[in-house]
Amino acid sequence: PVVGVDVVAVAEVAARDEHDRRAEPERAIDMNHYADRQITGQIDAILEENPAEKIVTFACNWCSYAGADFAGVSRLQYPPNARLIRTMCSGRVDESFIWRAFRLGAPVVLVSGCHFGDCHYIDANHWTQKRVEKVWKRMERLGIRPERLQLEWVSAAEGLRWQEVMRRMEELRQAVTGEEIAATVAVLSQPYKGKAPPLPKATPPETSVLPLTAEPAP
Image (tube, rainbow, N blue to C red; front, side, top):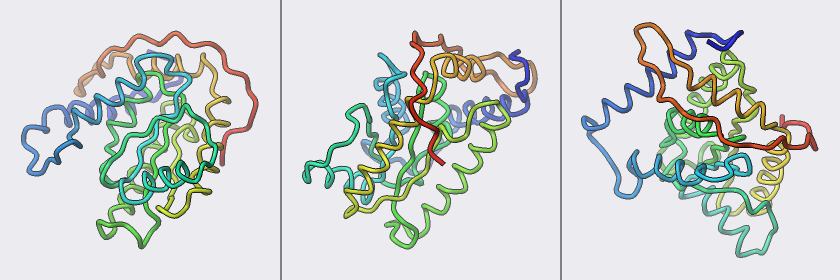
């Protein structure tokens, strides 16, 4: 075991991962092009090569993804290493997607959706916030800096805000060292002897030490 790690938190992550794997065939609703396997496949593809250079971004179809598109057509410059995964709602971003990204070597993860009151699915983004807050708490217990997971609300008309958010994410990414990424992968990949099943083993990616050029985003 990794010294100083809350093994109960590791078990909780492991149990959640296994629950999702087993429960998937029983789910009543699944959306074409947005099924779990398709989303996890995108995560795997993004982090297959040079994961330390990537900003894994889950973007809501109606607001954040459209905001990113608006920034593009407006020719606003922002870091090109952001990799967007479109979901119909930020509420679609399961905890297991976030843990998978970190387990595969992502330095930072962004979950982005509509502002409160603008969600196309009534109040689903409120559940997004609760879910992310729960992940933050578990990250802290596991010895992973919670600020490596960011939650931002961006509307379809906020191209400038999207540009600002992505620049902050790049600054945060540069502040994550290769050693920190490898330690995260090790924590999330360690076996756990107990009732909860272990997480699938993962090999720490080859990463170089990134320069500490900026403080983490608040």
